[in-house]
Image 1: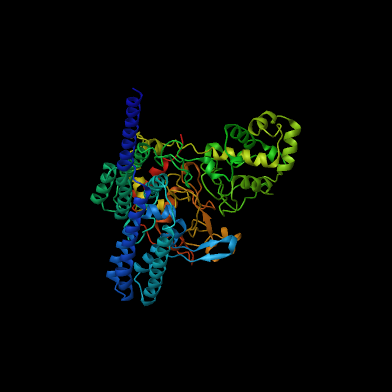
Image 2: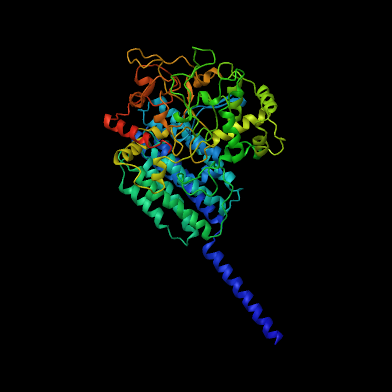
Length: 595
Protein backbone atom coordinates (compact mmCIF):
# COMPACT_ATOMS: atom_id res chain seq x y z
CA UNK A 1 0.00 0.00 0.00
CA UNK A 2 2.72 2.43 1.01
CA UNK A 3 4.80 1.48 -2.04
CA UNK A 4 1.82 2.12 -4.36
CA UNK A 5 1.24 5.47 -2.65
CA UNK A 6 4.89 6.42 -3.04
CA UNK A 7 4.84 5.52 -6.73
CA UNK A 8 1.69 7.54 -7.23
CA UNK A 9 3.18 10.61 -5.54
CA UNK A 10 6.40 10.24 -7.54
CA UNK A 11 4.42 10.01 -10.77
CA UNK A 12 2.44 13.13 -9.95
CA UNK A 13 5.64 15.03 -9.19
CA UNK A 14 7.20 13.91 -12.48
CA UNK A 15 4.06 14.91 -14.39
CA UNK A 16 4.11 18.39 -12.82
CA UNK A 17 7.83 18.76 -13.52
CA UNK A 18 7.23 17.73 -17.13
CA UNK A 19 4.36 20.18 -17.53
CA UNK A 20 6.44 22.97 -15.95
CA UNK A 21 9.38 22.23 -18.24
CA UNK A 22 7.14 22.16 -21.28
CA UNK A 23 5.59 25.46 -20.16
CA UNK A 24 9.01 27.05 -19.78
CA UNK A 25 10.14 25.68 -23.12
CA UNK A 26 7.05 26.70 -25.03
CA UNK A 27 6.09 30.04 -23.47
CA UNK A 28 9.13 31.35 -21.58
CA UNK A 29 12.14 31.36 -23.88
CA UNK A 30 15.16 32.86 -22.25
CA UNK A 31 16.21 36.42 -22.93
CA UNK A 32 19.37 34.91 -24.42
CA UNK A 33 17.42 34.01 -27.55
CA UNK A 34 16.35 37.61 -28.04
CA UNK A 35 19.89 38.73 -27.36
CA UNK A 36 21.13 36.37 -30.06
CA UNK A 37 18.57 37.74 -32.48
CA UNK A 38 19.76 41.26 -31.66
CA UNK A 39 23.33 40.23 -32.45
CA UNK A 40 22.20 39.02 -35.87
CA UNK A 41 20.33 42.24 -36.61
CA UNK A 42 23.27 44.31 -35.41
CA UNK A 43 25.51 42.38 -37.80
CA UNK A 44 23.10 43.25 -40.63
CA UNK A 45 23.40 46.95 -39.74
CA UNK A 46 27.19 46.67 -39.77
CA UNK A 47 27.03 44.97 -43.15
CA UNK A 48 24.94 47.77 -44.68
CA UNK A 49 27.37 50.36 -43.38
CA UNK A 50 30.53 48.45 -44.34
CA UNK A 51 29.44 47.18 -47.76
CA UNK A 52 27.05 49.87 -49.00
CA UNK A 53 27.31 53.16 -47.15
CA UNK A 54 31.09 53.31 -46.82
CA UNK A 55 31.91 52.56 -50.51
CA UNK A 56 29.27 55.00 -51.78
CA UNK A 57 30.62 57.79 -49.59
CA UNK A 58 34.19 57.07 -50.65
CA UNK A 59 33.12 57.42 -54.29
CA UNK A 60 31.02 60.54 -53.55
CA UNK A 61 28.02 58.77 -55.06
CA UNK A 62 25.16 60.85 -53.68
CA UNK A 63 22.31 58.63 -54.90
CA UNK A 64 23.90 55.41 -53.66
CA UNK A 65 24.92 57.07 -50.38
CA UNK A 66 21.36 58.24 -49.69
CA UNK A 67 19.95 54.82 -50.51
CA UNK A 68 22.45 53.08 -48.22
CA UNK A 69 21.93 55.70 -45.51
CA UNK A 70 18.17 55.15 -45.46
CA UNK A 71 18.63 51.38 -45.41
CA UNK A 72 21.06 51.68 -42.49
CA UNK A 73 18.65 53.91 -40.56
CA UNK A 74 15.78 51.49 -41.03
CA UNK A 75 17.95 48.60 -39.88
CA UNK A 76 19.02 50.64 -36.85
CA UNK A 77 15.38 51.30 -35.98
CA UNK A 78 14.68 47.55 -35.77
CA UNK A 79 17.14 47.34 -32.87
CA UNK A 80 16.69 50.85 -31.47
CA UNK A 81 14.71 49.47 -28.49
CA UNK A 82 17.73 47.40 -27.44
CA UNK A 83 20.48 49.98 -28.02
CA UNK A 84 18.57 52.82 -26.35
CA UNK A 85 17.87 50.66 -23.32
CA UNK A 86 21.17 48.85 -22.78
CA UNK A 87 23.60 51.28 -24.43
CA UNK A 88 22.10 54.76 -23.95
CA UNK A 89 25.41 56.64 -24.18
CA UNK A 90 26.29 54.91 -27.44
CA UNK A 91 22.75 55.51 -28.72
CA UNK A 92 23.45 59.25 -28.47
CA UNK A 93 26.58 58.79 -30.60
CA UNK A 94 24.61 56.77 -33.14
CA UNK A 95 21.45 58.85 -33.42
CA UNK A 96 21.71 61.86 -31.12
CA UNK A 97 20.60 65.39 -31.97
CA UNK A 98 22.98 67.29 -34.31
CA UNK A 99 23.91 69.90 -31.72
CA UNK A 100 26.93 70.27 -29.46
CA UNK A 101 26.63 68.56 -26.09
CA UNK A 102 28.18 70.67 -23.34
CA UNK A 103 29.40 68.93 -20.17
CA UNK A 104 29.46 71.80 -17.69
CA UNK A 105 31.08 69.85 -14.87
CA UNK A 106 34.00 68.83 -17.08
CA UNK A 107 34.12 72.04 -19.14
CA UNK A 108 33.89 69.97 -22.32
CA UNK A 109 32.10 70.44 -25.63
CA UNK A 110 31.17 67.19 -27.38
CA UNK A 111 30.55 67.56 -31.09
CA UNK A 112 27.53 65.68 -32.41
CA UNK A 113 27.95 62.49 -34.40
CA UNK A 114 25.81 59.79 -35.93
CA UNK A 115 22.90 59.42 -38.31
CA UNK A 116 21.45 62.90 -37.81
CA UNK A 117 24.78 64.55 -38.57
CA UNK A 118 25.08 62.37 -41.69
CA UNK A 119 21.58 63.41 -42.77
CA UNK A 120 22.41 67.10 -42.49
CA UNK A 121 25.40 66.59 -44.80
CA UNK A 122 23.68 64.29 -47.29
CA UNK A 123 20.56 66.38 -47.67
CA UNK A 124 22.25 69.79 -47.97
CA UNK A 125 23.93 69.29 -51.36
CA UNK A 126 27.17 67.70 -50.09
CA UNK A 127 30.43 69.13 -51.37
CA UNK A 128 33.82 67.44 -51.50
CA UNK A 129 34.46 68.68 -47.97
CA UNK A 130 31.06 67.33 -46.97
CA UNK A 131 31.97 63.86 -48.19
CA UNK A 132 35.17 64.01 -46.16
CA UNK A 133 33.12 64.79 -43.07
CA UNK A 134 30.64 62.10 -44.03
CA UNK A 135 33.41 59.53 -44.34
CA UNK A 136 34.62 60.42 -40.85
CA UNK A 137 31.07 59.99 -39.53
CA UNK A 138 30.78 56.55 -41.10
CA UNK A 139 34.06 55.47 -39.54
CA UNK A 140 32.96 56.71 -36.13
CA UNK A 141 29.74 54.73 -36.47
CA UNK A 142 31.67 51.59 -37.33
CA UNK A 143 33.68 51.97 -34.13
CA UNK A 144 30.60 52.60 -32.02
CA UNK A 145 28.85 49.53 -33.37
CA UNK A 146 31.93 47.42 -32.67
CA UNK A 147 31.85 48.74 -29.11
CA UNK A 148 28.29 47.48 -28.73
CA UNK A 149 29.29 44.05 -30.07
CA UNK A 150 32.13 43.83 -27.56
CA UNK A 151 30.14 44.91 -24.51
CA UNK A 152 26.97 43.05 -25.39
CA UNK A 153 28.87 39.77 -25.04
CA UNK A 154 29.31 40.54 -21.35
CA UNK A 155 25.72 41.60 -20.66
CA UNK A 156 23.19 39.38 -18.98
CA UNK A 157 19.73 40.65 -19.78
CA UNK A 158 16.41 39.66 -18.28
CA UNK A 159 12.89 39.11 -19.54
CA UNK A 160 11.72 42.06 -17.45
CA UNK A 161 14.28 44.37 -19.04
CA UNK A 162 13.27 43.33 -22.54
CA UNK A 163 9.60 43.99 -21.88
CA UNK A 164 10.49 47.37 -20.40
CA UNK A 165 12.67 48.16 -23.42
CA UNK A 166 9.91 47.48 -25.96
CA UNK A 167 7.35 49.29 -23.78
CA UNK A 168 9.55 52.39 -23.84
CA UNK A 169 10.13 51.99 -27.57
CA UNK A 170 6.40 52.35 -28.22
CA UNK A 171 6.49 55.59 -26.23
CA UNK A 172 9.57 56.67 -28.21
CA UNK A 173 7.69 56.09 -31.47
CA UNK A 174 4.69 58.01 -30.10
CA UNK A 175 6.55 61.05 -28.82
CA UNK A 176 9.51 61.23 -31.20
CA UNK A 177 9.40 58.73 -34.04
CA UNK A 178 6.28 59.81 -35.91
CA UNK A 179 7.07 63.54 -35.52
CA UNK A 180 10.17 63.57 -37.73
CA UNK A 181 12.28 64.42 -34.70
CA UNK A 182 15.37 62.51 -35.80
CA UNK A 183 14.88 62.61 -39.57
CA UNK A 184 13.89 66.20 -40.37
CA UNK A 185 15.32 66.29 -43.90
CA UNK A 186 14.75 62.78 -45.23
CA UNK A 187 11.26 62.65 -43.65
CA UNK A 188 11.44 58.89 -43.26
CA UNK A 189 9.84 58.79 -39.83
CA UNK A 190 6.84 56.70 -40.93
CA UNK A 191 8.72 53.79 -42.55
CA UNK A 192 11.22 53.99 -39.70
CA UNK A 193 8.36 53.69 -37.19
CA UNK A 194 7.30 50.54 -39.03
CA UNK A 195 10.85 49.23 -38.73
CA UNK A 196 10.90 49.96 -35.00
CA UNK A 197 7.59 48.12 -34.60
CA UNK A 198 9.02 45.14 -36.47
CA UNK A 199 11.78 44.99 -33.88
CA UNK A 200 9.14 44.98 -31.13
CA UNK A 201 7.24 42.28 -33.01
CA UNK A 202 10.32 40.07 -33.08
CA UNK A 203 10.67 40.25 -29.29
CA UNK A 204 7.00 39.52 -28.70
CA UNK A 205 7.05 36.66 -31.21
CA UNK A 206 9.83 35.01 -29.23
CA UNK A 207 7.51 34.88 -26.23
CA UNK A 208 4.39 33.96 -28.19
CA UNK A 209 5.61 30.87 -30.10
CA UNK A 210 6.74 32.86 -33.15
CA UNK A 211 3.33 34.47 -33.63
CA UNK A 212 3.48 38.17 -34.38
CA UNK A 213 0.75 39.88 -32.33
CA UNK A 214 -2.16 41.19 -34.38
CA UNK A 215 -1.89 44.65 -32.78
CA UNK A 216 1.67 45.08 -34.07
CA UNK A 217 0.83 43.73 -37.52
CA UNK A 218 -2.09 46.17 -37.80
CA UNK A 219 0.08 49.11 -36.76
CA UNK A 220 2.75 48.24 -39.33
CA UNK A 221 0.10 47.75 -42.02
CA UNK A 222 -1.39 51.16 -41.21
CA UNK A 223 2.02 52.80 -41.66
CA UNK A 224 2.52 50.99 -44.96
CA UNK A 225 -0.87 52.23 -46.23
CA UNK A 226 -0.45 55.82 -45.05
CA UNK A 227 2.91 57.13 -46.23
CA UNK A 228 2.31 60.88 -46.60
CA UNK A 229 4.19 62.58 -43.77
CA UNK A 230 2.19 65.81 -43.79
CA UNK A 231 -1.17 64.08 -44.16
CA UNK A 232 -0.57 61.26 -41.68
CA UNK A 233 -3.29 60.93 -39.03
CA UNK A 234 -1.15 60.69 -35.92
CA UNK A 235 -4.14 61.03 -33.62
CA UNK A 236 -5.77 57.93 -35.06
CA UNK A 237 -2.49 56.04 -35.20
CA UNK A 238 -1.70 56.67 -31.54
CA UNK A 239 -5.14 55.92 -30.14
CA UNK A 240 -6.15 53.05 -32.44
CA UNK A 241 -2.80 51.38 -33.11
CA UNK A 242 0.10 52.35 -30.83
CA UNK A 243 -1.86 52.27 -27.58
CA UNK A 244 -3.16 48.74 -28.38
CA UNK A 245 0.44 47.63 -29.00
CA UNK A 246 1.37 48.92 -25.54
CA UNK A 247 -1.59 47.11 -24.04
CA UNK A 248 -0.56 43.85 -25.72
CA UNK A 249 2.99 44.21 -24.37
CA UNK A 250 1.62 44.61 -20.86
CA UNK A 251 -0.74 41.66 -21.27
CA UNK A 252 2.04 39.44 -22.61
CA UNK A 253 4.31 40.39 -19.72
CA UNK A 254 1.63 39.45 -17.20
CA UNK A 255 0.74 36.28 -19.08
CA UNK A 256 4.31 35.07 -18.75
CA UNK A 257 4.45 36.14 -15.10
CA UNK A 258 7.20 38.66 -15.71
CA UNK A 259 7.35 41.42 -13.12
CA UNK A 260 7.58 45.04 -14.17
CA UNK A 261 11.16 46.13 -13.61
CA UNK A 262 12.31 49.40 -12.07
CA UNK A 263 12.49 51.57 -15.15
CA UNK A 264 14.84 54.44 -15.89
CA UNK A 265 11.87 56.40 -17.20
CA UNK A 266 9.99 59.03 -15.21
CA UNK A 267 6.82 57.16 -16.09
CA UNK A 268 5.40 54.64 -13.66
CA UNK A 269 6.93 51.22 -14.15
CA UNK A 270 3.57 49.81 -15.25
CA UNK A 271 2.37 52.71 -17.40
CA UNK A 272 0.66 51.42 -20.53
CA UNK A 273 -0.10 54.69 -22.34
CA UNK A 274 1.52 58.12 -22.27
CA UNK A 275 -1.97 59.54 -21.93
CA UNK A 276 -3.42 57.44 -19.11
CA UNK A 277 -4.30 58.87 -15.71
CA UNK A 278 -1.25 59.01 -13.45
CA UNK A 279 1.14 57.97 -16.21
CA UNK A 280 4.01 59.77 -14.46
CA UNK A 281 5.67 58.98 -11.17
CA UNK A 282 6.28 62.44 -9.70
CA UNK A 283 8.76 60.97 -7.25
CA UNK A 284 11.09 60.19 -10.15
CA UNK A 285 11.64 63.92 -10.55
CA UNK A 286 13.22 64.30 -7.10
CA UNK A 287 16.68 63.35 -5.93
CA UNK A 288 15.90 61.06 -2.97
CA UNK A 289 13.08 59.49 -0.96
CA UNK A 290 12.98 62.29 1.61
CA UNK A 291 11.63 64.53 -1.15
CA UNK A 292 8.76 62.25 -2.15
CA UNK A 293 5.49 64.08 -2.56
CA UNK A 294 2.64 63.65 -0.07
CA UNK A 295 -0.82 65.13 0.32
CA UNK A 296 0.22 66.80 3.58
CA UNK A 297 3.23 68.50 1.95
CA UNK A 298 1.01 69.73 -0.87
CA UNK A 299 -1.53 71.22 1.59
CA UNK A 300 1.24 73.01 3.48
CA UNK A 301 2.91 74.18 0.28
CA UNK A 302 -0.33 75.63 -1.08
CA UNK A 303 -0.88 77.62 2.11
CA UNK A 304 2.68 78.99 2.01
CA UNK A 305 2.36 79.76 -1.71
CA UNK A 306 -0.46 82.20 -1.01
CA UNK A 307 1.03 83.69 2.16
CA UNK A 308 3.04 86.96 1.98
CA UNK A 309 4.93 85.87 5.09
CA UNK A 310 7.77 84.76 2.78
CA UNK A 311 8.54 88.33 1.71
CA UNK A 312 10.16 90.78 4.08
CA UNK A 313 7.60 93.46 3.24
CA UNK A 314 4.70 91.06 3.95
CA UNK A 315 2.90 92.32 0.84
CA UNK A 316 3.98 89.82 -1.82
CA UNK A 317 3.40 86.07 -2.09
CA UNK A 318 4.18 83.55 -4.81
CA UNK A 319 0.57 83.98 -5.98
CA UNK A 320 1.19 87.69 -6.55
CA UNK A 321 2.89 86.78 -9.83
CA UNK A 322 1.53 83.28 -10.40
CA UNK A 323 -2.26 83.59 -10.56
CA UNK A 324 -4.15 80.29 -10.52
CA UNK A 325 -6.80 81.78 -12.83
CA UNK A 326 -4.10 82.47 -15.45
CA UNK A 327 -2.52 79.00 -15.23
CA UNK A 328 -0.14 80.47 -12.64
CA UNK A 329 1.14 83.23 -14.93
CA UNK A 330 0.31 86.94 -14.56
CA UNK A 331 -0.74 88.32 -17.96
CA UNK A 332 2.08 90.88 -18.02
CA UNK A 333 4.74 91.27 -20.67
CA UNK A 334 7.39 90.96 -17.98
CA UNK A 335 6.93 90.18 -14.31
CA UNK A 336 6.46 93.12 -11.95
CA UNK A 337 9.48 93.74 -9.72
CA UNK A 338 9.45 94.64 -6.02
CA UNK A 339 10.55 98.16 -6.88
CA UNK A 340 7.34 99.83 -7.97
CA UNK A 341 7.09 100.80 -11.63
CA UNK A 342 9.84 98.39 -12.72
CA UNK A 343 9.84 94.94 -14.27
CA UNK A 344 11.96 91.83 -14.11
CA UNK A 345 13.97 90.66 -17.10
CA UNK A 346 11.52 88.00 -18.28
CA UNK A 347 7.90 86.97 -18.68
CA UNK A 348 6.27 84.99 -15.85
CA UNK A 349 5.97 81.33 -16.89
CA UNK A 350 3.15 78.97 -15.98
CA UNK A 351 3.73 76.66 -13.02
CA UNK A 352 1.40 73.97 -14.33
CA UNK A 353 3.44 70.86 -15.17
CA UNK A 354 6.62 72.58 -13.95
CA UNK A 355 7.37 69.54 -11.82
CA UNK A 356 7.70 67.40 -14.97
CA UNK A 357 11.01 68.85 -16.07
CA UNK A 358 14.64 68.60 -15.03
CA UNK A 359 15.75 72.23 -14.96
CA UNK A 360 14.08 75.48 -13.94
CA UNK A 361 13.95 79.15 -14.93
CA UNK A 362 14.22 80.16 -18.58
CA UNK A 363 18.00 79.82 -18.38
CA UNK A 364 17.84 76.42 -16.61
CA UNK A 365 19.90 77.74 -13.70
CA UNK A 366 18.16 75.66 -11.01
CA UNK A 367 18.27 71.89 -10.85
CA UNK A 368 15.19 71.41 -8.67
CA UNK A 369 11.99 73.13 -7.66
CA UNK A 370 13.43 73.46 -4.17
CA UNK A 371 16.37 75.45 -5.58
CA UNK A 372 13.97 77.54 -7.61
CA UNK A 373 11.94 78.42 -4.51
CA UNK A 374 15.10 79.44 -2.68
CA UNK A 375 16.23 81.66 -5.54
CA UNK A 376 12.87 83.40 -5.98
CA UNK A 377 12.30 84.11 -2.28
CA UNK A 378 15.79 85.56 -1.85
CA UNK A 379 15.88 87.54 -5.11
CA UNK A 380 15.79 91.24 -4.23
CA UNK A 381 13.39 92.15 -7.03
CA UNK A 382 11.17 89.07 -6.90
CA UNK A 383 10.31 88.45 -3.22
CA UNK A 384 13.12 90.21 -1.38
CA UNK A 385 12.70 87.72 1.40
CA UNK A 386 14.62 85.32 3.58
CA UNK A 387 13.58 81.75 4.30
CA UNK A 388 15.37 81.87 7.64
CA UNK A 389 13.50 84.99 8.72
CA UNK A 390 10.23 83.61 7.36
CA UNK A 391 10.79 80.46 9.43
CA UNK A 392 11.19 82.50 12.58
CA UNK A 393 8.03 84.49 11.86
CA UNK A 394 6.06 81.30 11.12
CA UNK A 395 7.27 79.58 14.27
CA UNK A 396 6.56 82.65 16.37
CA UNK A 397 2.98 82.90 15.11
CA UNK A 398 2.34 79.19 15.56
CA UNK A 399 -0.44 79.11 12.94
CA UNK A 400 1.36 76.57 10.78
CA UNK A 401 2.35 74.18 13.56
CA UNK A 402 -0.20 71.47 12.74
CA UNK A 403 0.52 71.63 9.02
CA UNK A 404 4.28 71.28 9.50
CA UNK A 405 3.72 68.42 11.97
CA UNK A 406 1.55 66.58 9.43
CA UNK A 407 3.93 67.16 6.51
CA UNK A 408 7.20 66.55 8.37
CA UNK A 409 6.81 64.12 11.26
CA UNK A 410 10.25 64.88 12.67
CA UNK A 411 9.73 68.64 12.64
CA UNK A 412 7.92 68.99 15.97
CA UNK A 413 5.68 71.35 14.03
CA UNK A 414 8.45 73.84 13.34
CA UNK A 415 9.35 75.50 10.08
CA UNK A 416 12.85 75.79 8.70
CA UNK A 417 14.22 76.96 5.36
CA UNK A 418 14.41 73.52 3.77
CA UNK A 419 10.92 72.49 4.85
CA UNK A 420 9.46 75.66 3.35
CA UNK A 421 11.35 75.12 0.11
CA UNK A 422 10.27 71.51 -0.11
CA UNK A 423 6.63 72.21 0.74
CA UNK A 424 6.44 74.86 -1.97
CA UNK A 425 8.09 72.48 -4.43
CA UNK A 426 5.64 69.70 -3.51
CA UNK A 427 2.69 71.98 -4.18
CA UNK A 428 4.06 72.96 -7.58
CA UNK A 429 4.68 69.30 -8.42
CA UNK A 430 1.01 68.64 -7.77
CA UNK A 431 -0.08 71.12 -10.45
CA UNK A 432 -0.25 68.54 -13.23
CA UNK A 433 -3.87 67.38 -13.51
CA UNK A 434 -3.81 66.13 -17.13
CA UNK A 435 -7.59 66.65 -17.37
CA UNK A 436 -7.91 68.78 -20.50
CA UNK A 437 -10.29 67.95 -23.33
CA UNK A 438 -7.31 66.56 -25.23
CA UNK A 439 -6.46 64.21 -22.35
CA UNK A 440 -10.02 62.97 -22.13
CA UNK A 441 -10.08 62.33 -25.86
CA UNK A 442 -6.90 60.28 -25.63
CA UNK A 443 -8.60 58.21 -22.92
CA UNK A 444 -11.41 57.22 -25.31
CA UNK A 445 -13.91 60.07 -24.97
CA UNK A 446 -14.10 60.82 -28.70
CA UNK A 447 -16.64 63.58 -28.20
CA UNK A 448 -14.06 65.96 -26.78
CA UNK A 449 -12.35 67.09 -30.02
CA UNK A 450 -13.87 68.44 -33.20
CA UNK A 451 -12.48 67.99 -36.71
CA UNK A 452 -10.45 71.20 -36.72
CA UNK A 453 -8.87 70.41 -33.34
CA UNK A 454 -7.93 66.93 -34.54
CA UNK A 455 -6.38 68.43 -37.64
CA UNK A 456 -4.49 70.88 -35.45
CA UNK A 457 -2.99 68.06 -33.39
CA UNK A 458 -1.84 66.25 -36.52
CA UNK A 459 -0.23 69.44 -37.84
CA UNK A 460 1.39 70.11 -34.46
CA UNK A 461 2.85 66.60 -34.46
CA UNK A 462 3.80 66.60 -38.12
CA UNK A 463 4.09 69.31 -40.76
CA UNK A 464 4.44 72.21 -38.29
CA UNK A 465 7.20 70.37 -36.37
CA UNK A 466 5.98 71.81 -33.04
CA UNK A 467 6.28 68.42 -31.33
CA UNK A 468 9.97 68.11 -32.18
CA UNK A 469 10.59 70.62 -29.36
CA UNK A 470 7.33 70.53 -27.38
CA UNK A 471 7.21 66.80 -26.78
CA UNK A 472 3.96 64.98 -26.12
CA UNK A 473 2.34 64.34 -23.67
CA UNK A 474 3.60 67.21 -21.47
CA UNK A 475 4.30 69.37 -24.54
CA UNK A 476 7.42 70.84 -22.96
CA UNK A 477 11.13 70.39 -23.72
CA UNK A 478 11.61 67.19 -21.73
CA UNK A 479 11.69 64.37 -24.30
CA UNK A 480 10.08 60.95 -23.94
CA UNK A 481 10.34 58.17 -23.10
CA UNK A 482 12.82 58.76 -20.26
CA UNK A 483 12.00 62.41 -19.51
CA UNK A 484 15.46 62.74 -17.98
CA UNK A 485 16.64 66.01 -19.51
CA UNK A 486 15.09 69.41 -20.18
CA UNK A 487 16.25 71.13 -23.31
CA UNK A 488 16.89 74.72 -24.33
CA UNK A 489 16.58 76.15 -27.83
CA UNK A 490 17.85 79.20 -29.68
CA UNK A 491 14.86 80.61 -31.58
CA UNK A 492 16.08 84.09 -32.43
CA UNK A 493 13.25 85.82 -30.54
CA UNK A 494 13.04 89.52 -31.47
CA UNK A 495 13.18 92.43 -29.06
CA UNK A 496 9.98 93.92 -30.48
CA UNK A 497 7.13 92.58 -32.62
CA UNK A 498 7.83 95.20 -35.31
CA UNK A 499 8.65 93.22 -38.50
CA UNK A 500 10.34 96.29 -39.97
CA UNK A 501 12.98 96.33 -37.24
CA UNK A 502 14.12 92.74 -36.67
CA UNK A 503 16.60 92.76 -33.80
CA UNK A 504 17.29 89.90 -31.44
CA UNK A 505 16.29 90.39 -27.83
CA UNK A 506 19.23 91.51 -25.70
CA UNK A 507 18.63 88.85 -23.06
CA UNK A 508 21.51 86.41 -23.55
CA UNK A 509 19.64 83.56 -21.85
CA UNK A 510 21.75 80.63 -20.71
CA UNK A 511 24.88 82.38 -21.96
CA UNK A 512 24.59 84.78 -19.02
CA UNK A 513 25.44 81.85 -16.74
CA UNK A 514 27.86 79.86 -18.89
CA UNK A 515 29.88 81.61 -21.57
CA UNK A 516 29.66 79.05 -24.33
CA UNK A 517 28.73 80.56 -27.71
CA UNK A 518 26.22 77.73 -28.21
CA UNK A 519 24.26 79.13 -25.26
CA UNK A 520 23.78 82.67 -26.63
CA UNK A 521 20.05 83.45 -26.50
CA UNK A 522 19.21 79.87 -25.48
CA UNK A 523 16.05 79.46 -23.40
CA UNK A 524 14.22 76.51 -21.92
CA UNK A 525 11.33 75.09 -23.91
CA UNK A 526 8.20 75.53 -21.74
CA UNK A 527 4.97 73.57 -21.87
CA UNK A 528 2.21 74.79 -24.18
CA UNK A 529 -0.48 73.27 -21.97
CA UNK A 530 -2.91 76.00 -20.86
CA UNK A 531 -1.25 78.34 -23.35
CA UNK A 532 -4.53 80.11 -24.07
CA UNK A 533 -4.35 81.49 -20.51
CA UNK A 534 -0.70 82.54 -20.45
CA UNK A 535 -0.39 85.43 -22.92
CA UNK A 536 1.80 87.28 -23.72
CA UNK A 537 4.31 84.80 -25.14
CA UNK A 538 8.02 84.03 -25.38
CA UNK A 539 10.59 84.66 -22.65
CA UNK A 540 10.27 88.41 -23.12
CA UNK A 541 6.52 88.55 -23.71
CA UNK A 542 7.08 90.03 -27.17
CA UNK A 543 4.00 88.47 -28.78
CA UNK A 544 0.50 89.18 -27.54
CA UNK A 545 -1.32 86.52 -29.56
CA UNK A 546 -0.86 82.93 -30.64
CA UNK A 547 -1.33 84.06 -34.24
CA UNK A 548 1.84 86.14 -33.91
CA UNK A 549 3.69 83.19 -32.39
CA UNK A 550 2.65 80.84 -35.20
CA UNK A 551 3.61 83.42 -37.80
CA UNK A 552 7.08 83.71 -36.24
CA UNK A 553 7.64 79.95 -36.42
CA UNK A 554 6.09 79.70 -39.88
CA UNK A 555 8.71 82.11 -41.22
CA UNK A 556 11.61 80.16 -39.72
CA UNK A 557 12.08 81.89 -36.38
CA UNK A 558 14.60 84.68 -36.02
CA UNK A 559 16.54 83.91 -39.19
CA UNK A 560 13.29 83.85 -41.13
CA UNK A 561 12.38 87.40 -40.12
CA UNK A 562 15.84 88.79 -40.80
CA UNK A 563 17.69 88.29 -37.51
CA UNK A 564 21.20 86.99 -38.08
CA UNK A 565 22.35 84.37 -35.58
CA UNK A 566 25.01 81.76 -36.09
CA UNK A 567 23.67 79.37 -33.45
CA UNK A 568 19.90 79.19 -34.01
CA UNK A 569 18.79 75.64 -33.22
CA UNK A 570 15.33 76.13 -34.71
CA UNK A 571 15.36 75.38 -38.42
CA UNK A 572 15.38 78.57 -40.46
CA UNK A 573 13.31 76.94 -43.20
CA UNK A 574 9.79 78.17 -43.75
CA UNK A 575 7.03 75.77 -42.66
CA UNK A 576 4.67 76.93 -45.42
CA UNK A 577 1.63 76.64 -43.19
CA UNK A 578 -1.55 78.19 -44.52
CA UNK A 579 -3.70 80.52 -42.42
CA UNK A 580 -6.22 77.72 -42.07
CA UNK A 581 -3.55 75.33 -40.85
CA UNK A 582 -2.27 77.81 -38.28
CA UNK A 583 -5.85 78.38 -37.10
CA UNK A 584 -6.24 74.62 -36.69
CA UNK A 585 -3.08 74.43 -34.58
CA UNK A 586 -4.35 77.23 -32.35
CA UNK A 587 -7.68 75.40 -32.04
CA UNK A 588 -5.80 72.29 -30.89
CA UNK A 589 -3.79 74.31 -28.37
CA UNK A 590 -7.09 75.41 -26.88
CA UNK A 591 -7.89 71.77 -26.07
CA UNK A 592 -4.87 71.66 -23.73
CA UNK A 593 -6.58 73.89 -21.17
CA UNK A 594 -7.11 72.03 -17.91
CA UNK A 595 -10.70 71.67 -16.72
